[in-house]
Image (cartoon, rainbow, N blue to C red; front, top):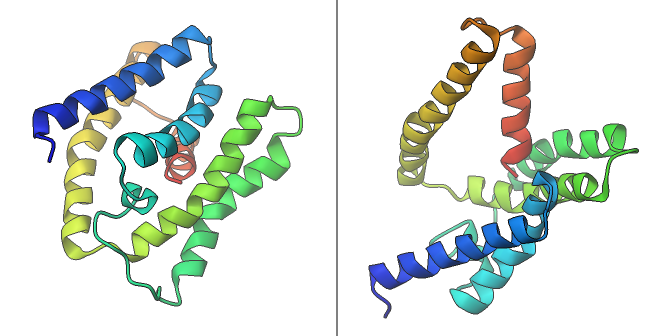
Length: 169
């Protein structure tokens, strides 16, 4: 079994390689994210040598999912699919592919959500209260620096929530 130091080194090397590919190929932000999807799948299968399902769940999932898995998946699909259909007719291919990825990503997201346990929800809350709070503070600070104040219009908050819902899947 690999020790923690080795695993951290492999993960850091993998992220470094991904970043280098983005810089080396001059990928746009969306192309970089789209490139990350097969890159992550290849990493999980050939480097980590772990099942793809462990990207979303650490423990094996039950074979039978609750009835509400499909409605949850559909809810997560609505926004990216709507944007894909209504707003990307003239967008670049990386943008379109990003929205396809977000739409399809709703399936494993729903699968993970319906399989979350109380401990998983506590970990998620801790993550949101630490890293999420830090991200919000950075966003508010940069907004204040750009606009000389802390007032954020309702449209700005709607954009934050929309982006969160698009990036989740």
